[in-house]
Image (cartoon, rainbow, N blue to C red; front, side):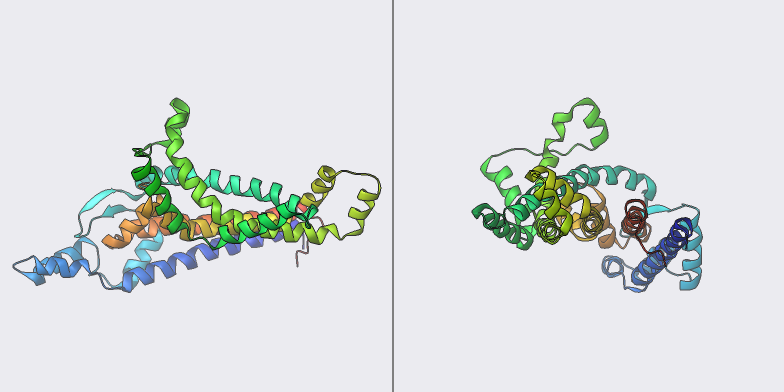
Length: 323
């Protein structure tokens, strides 16, 4: 099988996986009872009419299959509908809400993932080359602590220190891209969730970099390079170049786990109106269009990461098996 055929097949699987994920998300949300209907009935003189009005506004009276077919067509044509309130009121287009929220999430996710990757590469390769030193032992201990420390606890601690102890008023820019171009210093509040996010990522990546580097250290070519008098910097370069593919896989996996779990946790604690905050509010309101929209972003990111991982294997490793 040629590389082009392999990538075409993987792309087809990615598209199929996208629709499967969206189908599951639709069925889960569409078949769950809406607790907001009870609130409508409790506060109305005619509970039955009020509940039916909300169901009609949310298209919940239509047959499930018809709703799914309509939604599937809208998904394919990129018509993601308008946001809905708890009681069926129409809001802003989902695409506009996502366009506003995603940059706020990326403002700390991208630097957090990049920072953790760089720190893990540097420290992990150092620990592998100096495995018997006290620093290596201390780094390993800190790695386990970072991996086991819940981000929710660290985020609450950071919020307490900033708001109570330091009495700093934290305001997150509504448009991070505009702030980056006009006033980069105004982005400093995103530094806190960036560091919090990096703690768990560094803990996992550090152990993986150390394990991969230690394994490569036992190869014959490393002994040959060392015998020729190469220093630790050159040896580390050889280590990382040979461990690049597994490390890329780890970065893509971390990106997916970050979007699925940690974004929602961090934006629950920090007042960042990003993708996680939109998703949490949408679930609370049973806002089907926005739930599907946020789910699609997460699914697209995960599936795209897996596809890019396959592309990386094809690009960097000529020995890859495409069967």
